[in-house]
Image (cartoon, rainbow, N blue to C red; front, side, top):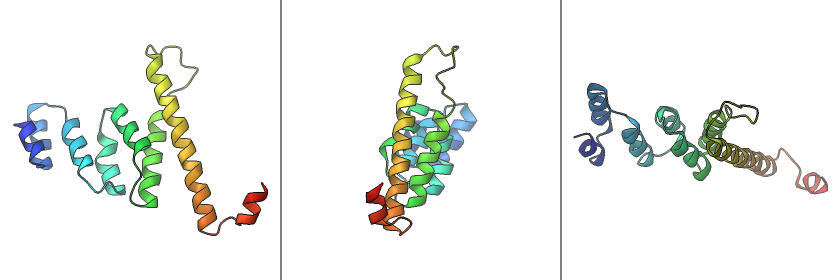
Amino acid sequence: MYDILISRQEYQAALMFADQHGLDKDEALKSHWLHSSQGVNEIKALLSNIKDHVFVLSECVGRFGPTEDAVRALLDLGLSITDRYRFSEPEVDDHSKVWDCLVARLMLLQYRERLETFLGINMGRFSLQEFKKS
């Protein structure tokens, strides 16, 4: 029944069904996210509530939001997820997961810098001539 509700894109009903029967809501949230406009509101309401951090990070790294605010929200969400992984944590058993998160974090930081540079040049915050000199 849960899968049928998701396939029909009846997400509220699927979430209520999952609540009533103790099911994981991630599949409904993922499907709803993938079929949404993927704006700031959807990032806050859907993507940030998905427990599968691998999926969320792949969306944060692989998606480009429809607005500057959506791009910033994706970057912020991805950076907040990866912020908890540190090289100095000896108790972490799955080092490949930590490595993947650190690589994702590096990519997100690069994307944020590119966004700031692009906006700085195109919105007049930086002079193109001054930027070329540095």
